[in-house]
Image (cartoon, rainbow, N blue to C red; front, side):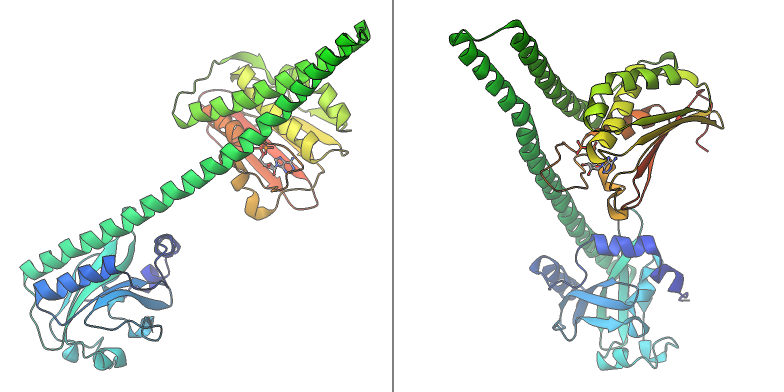
Length: 405
Ligand code: ADP
């Protein structure tokens, strides 16, 4: 009995898994064709095909005994036999000529498919993405041993697909790392160059005997600013490494969020003043809880200084409220906003929405911030649209029994 599989065919996760193989629509490749050829030889069948099944067509990725060209590499699903192999079990048909599903199928007639054996190609995540089949031009009863052999060959197709995906993942990660190293060296060089310049100027002035107390003060505070910037960049890098290696721990204490917000804003006074950002605070609730105050300060500092950086010249609104045992801190700016397609990306490691070099950053701040909030079993969400500013909402449980609303 063959079941209807239309639900399965249109399943979004299944289609995503097909697309993740990166194989749909690509040329036949020897690594797969060799396995098809092996199947025809061992099973003494004239044809073997490996197909991926999309939502509209069956795509022939590789075959033996059947020539795949740009014209013959796809067939519409209503002509597909392999779609019925997606059900998860081997599909063995002795004779399509007396099978009600295939009797009037022109593709079956054109390819002279009589005996058919198909094994689903199922990914690690459990999605049936296609099938490996062998076809005979005459009636054929498939033995259990033959089914087992084709299952083993299909397992090799799956290993090949997984291997390729692992290589692509490693390549992408390595590209990301290289890109990060380039950005990081650029970012580290900025404060370093400034430090170098300042020291040279001090030396020059001293050698000319033109160095007074005012100069001393000015240079020292500049040096301090640049070393602080360097320290922050290095801290971000080591936090990111600690987070990805699972060596990150919190030091929770009872604290007041209202006081921490005030303290953070005091520390950011100069940054906010320079960015011409006024801050409006709305303390709707007194928020007490057990949190890691220096880590939460890091989150607040990152989000508020991002607003100063990306939304300079516009006001920032900070609201503290309570919702279902959660402390909710909302930081809203009226800057350029973040495009919808970048709204998740910016929380990724090294994720930056703005490719321009004009604004500095490692793309680590929001990644670290979300991890810190999630370590507290809370959430950090963004609402934004281009031209209408960005609003970051931090929700932190006030008691360890709180459940995310
Ligand atoms: P960065 O160090 O690059 O600022 P973040 O992780 O803090 O790293 O931010 C990631 C990206 O998110 C930024 O590069 C920027 O493109 C975008 N972004 C963050 N905050 C804002 C904001 N308030 N307005 C517009 N874009 C923002």
